[in-house]
Image 1: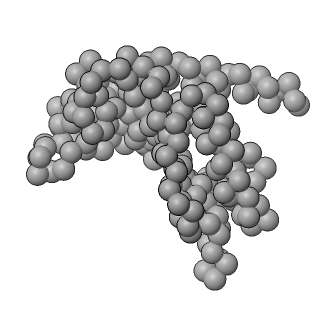
Image 2 (image 1 turned 180 degrees about the vertical axis):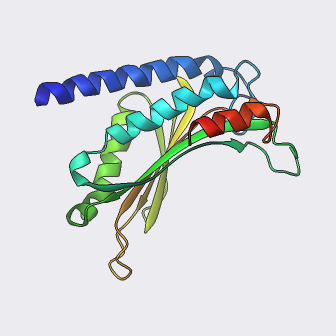
Length: 194
């Protein structure tokens, strides 16, 4: 049993290395990424799989013993600029997310689980930007070795409304130039994930 977990962890780390290598080329380019303009060297299709793999790797690091359900998995492209600046949505980034609810008896561990998850990426050179703890807490992770970013949101259990504690992991690739939100390129990529 331990060997299986160890083998799965090694395979998962290899996937993260592959995802990082695929997106690493644009990490060093000025202007690449969410705030600085589109990366002309990549296509949306080239960023999709590495971003999904990174999301899956992050989710795999959550102890499955405390997970009640996987509520939602989402994969789509999002506009990098406002509609006023880029009305056709030409600059887009691939975003992948997963939300899990924690078992009722494990809800008190939500922040600890998130902190452990964040620390596991920090050990690999990722830099965390933590928000102040609250009912909903967000931490962003960035790495010089990757153009992708990771966001981890913790929603604490709400006993008054019987809402379970939740963790959401969102990974986002660099902004790239596309033919627009309604283009065949974008719609085909988004259709393949549904």
